Length: 174
Image 1: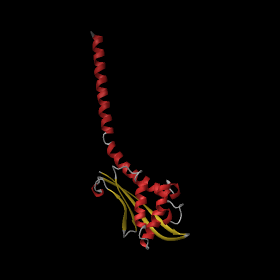
Image 2: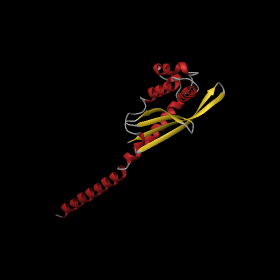
Image 3: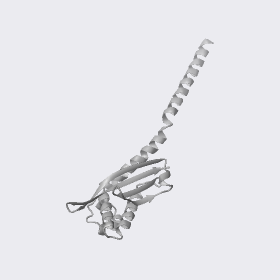
Image 4: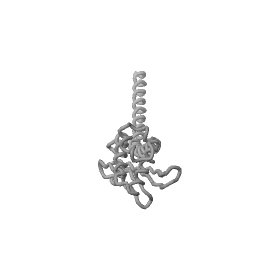
């Protein structure tokens, strides 16, 4: 009779330990999804900005190259530089260059940024920011998380600096 009770207490002890492990694991892993959503928004903004800063126009698929090839100085420009050059030309008389920059940016961003995110890409100086791209499955200003990543884009004429702009990417999560 005594041996049966020893096994009984061991089983109860094991069940109590298992219950404690489940409670501790739940307490640790419950807040993680919210943190990962925040981290995903920041990583998406940074990664997209890094992509357009380190990818050259010549490395894009041919259809996307043809969109802007005739309106930029070289296909050896990085995407951010090409967008900056098109923006500069739109300010200085090219009527189609801003529309071309918007179309090009939309072609480049659509396969990269998931439709569940709202995002806005702006360019300009500190006093005047123009929206190049805005995709809002919901209002970006209504987002619970809004991650912003910025980069300075230089427009060059050969070896001379012509202009510098701020390129900003905001990614929002509902």
